[in-house]
Length: 112
Image (cartoon, rainbow, N blue to C red; front, side, top):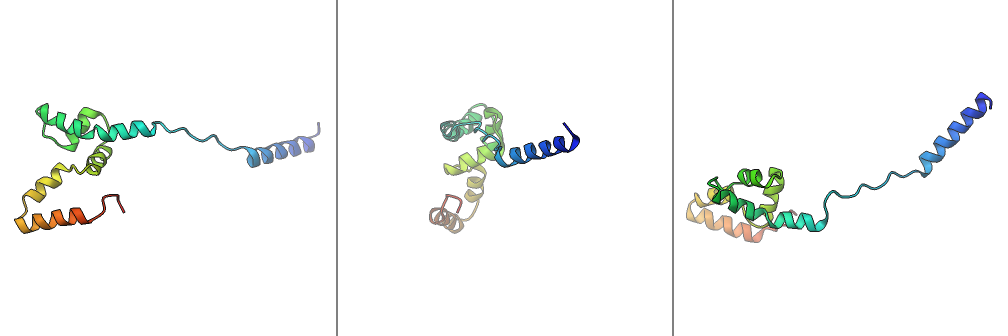
């Protein structure tokens, strides 16, 4: 085989591979049911942090659950649980608390 034939063969093979080869799709690490279950047990870990003598906060719930802080906070927030936010709203005067509750009810919670 001459050098020119070898070079043409390499070019043809590389062209065919680049045109036809598709990388396999990555499988999800977790299924939909597992994600839903981890979202549903987030309040349990917050409650357990309180029972364990720790302050019931997202950070302490994460210590028990072994998840990331942002994921745990997102799961709790989607269920309407935000301990720090509730504490701050509770410290406001009554009209401001009422306004906060009205805004909470009127704004969408789907992240739009």
